[in-house]
Image 1 (tube, rainbow, N blue to C red):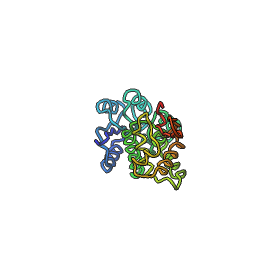
Image 2 (image 1 turned 180 degrees about the horizontal axis):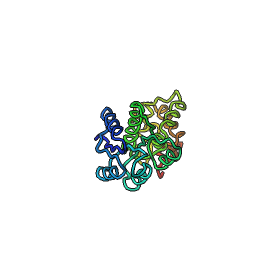
Image 3 (image 1 turned 90 degrees about the horizontal axis):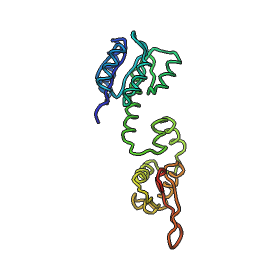
Image 4 (image 1 turned 120 degrees about the vertical axis):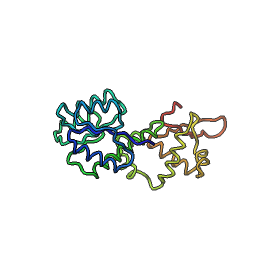
Length: 231
């Protein structure tokens, strides 16, 4: 995977240089331009249309929130992280409403900066790997900390995370015919009872939906489908 491109929009040349050197120490990112005014930053962003802009608020010719909204309007694939001395609550609210990924107050430490870029890279990778949506996947993107807590706290002892991941992978491959517990067990090399336990756990999470299918002879069969299936 190619490194993510970064533009630094910062009115203080010394601080922008520090940020650039910080990024050099973190894998997965490349600085493609530095702007020290709003006008200069706009021109650089227009040329490179980067994955990420590190954005200050105070500029001699404008402010970062106005630039954020312009980025949102013109460059839908560009994300923004504020790095600023602006401690006004209103500025933070505007940044959040504009979709800023994070808001870091100066003076910035390398550890805080590295943590944010790591989360951003993980966020981009997760979205890039998704082929279809389910509620668990959405929660992991929008509420990653909450999703992690829920996974840690609510995961029954009878559910092994690795086996669960394999079952979810198979569920994501299902067509409209669905699958029963026996077929899932054969596919993964586990018993029908174990497969049913994992499938029912996914039902409780809203990832899978069950349905009773009545054949011509014998008891009805319990099939499992993707939650967003039309079946």
